[in-house]
Length: 346
Ligand code: NAP
Ligand code: ZN
Image 1 (tube, rainbow, N blue to C red):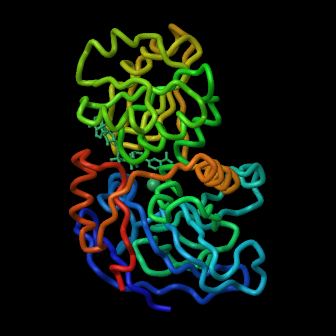
Image 2 (image 1 turned 45 degrees about the vertical axis):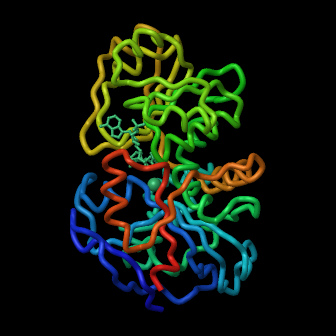
């Protein structure tokens, strides 16, 4: 099946309309008519080659929501007409310790990414900036009825990437959580941490988005461009989730953690981050990383968002506006996720 898509032809080049081949629906597969695809900063890192060489052309997109239009003979988990989602992975070995634990994203053989990855059949995966996709049913999530589909799409990456560390490091009542960067991931972290009952502080470059941050559920908002922020908040937080796509001064943020606090990096900048060991030692602090989340946890997150009425704040765009949207994300001018209406690819 050949379907319309938008692809980056080479590293750093603007995306252009194209077509890609989707495999025939196998016994364990689901064919999805895509309705919306979110634009994640990881899409931009990938097409710009920030994380190393990639196979081109690449059709990005790992925040996919659509409707099931065909299922394979062995599929019982999803049915034609269901509203479903696909996130950052479409396969893993299923047998290693990580997979068995439900941490498929840390598969010992490497998870198969939704795009720019080598699939089990040797082909290169192509993502959600497209009208249709065929995915193994085990990697397809159910999207609760109560969430608008355009607002649900970003949950498949930005939602789970922030939900996972917030749950793991115990964001909840009586816990002080800071979110660094109010972009796609950051605004989801604020909404989810607030819904989990934590006291939430946004640490943004400026106060430009303060009103939004407080409306999204933050209790406090500070500008990191103001040096007094780091004096005022020293030793405050139990957990800091860093969503920044660029290099930050790690020591400055570690200094904001209380004794035993943890700074979790989900932001994945092209350049290395460095820190002074004393920033950890002086208050038994931890510095951690976290990558998306397993399939079961992703479903838990979607159900949690359905129960709490949580979706992303989105700006729905036509596929032809994708390059302009990339420029705006790079300029931190996103409120708070661009989502492609894939009907505009028809
Ligand atoms: P985004 O929408 O561009 O948000 C990033 C935010 O970081 C910006 O809105 C901005 O917030 C802040 N920021 C940007 N440049 C900055 C700079 N030079 N200094 C300080 N702050 C800066 O990006 P996203 O889609 O949320 O993704 C964020 C990062 O997470 C990316 O690196 C992405 O690849 C990574 N990611 C990781 C995972 C994972 O599994 N770990 C999953 C998805 C994405 P303010 O304007 O509020 O300061
Ligand atoms: Zn992503």
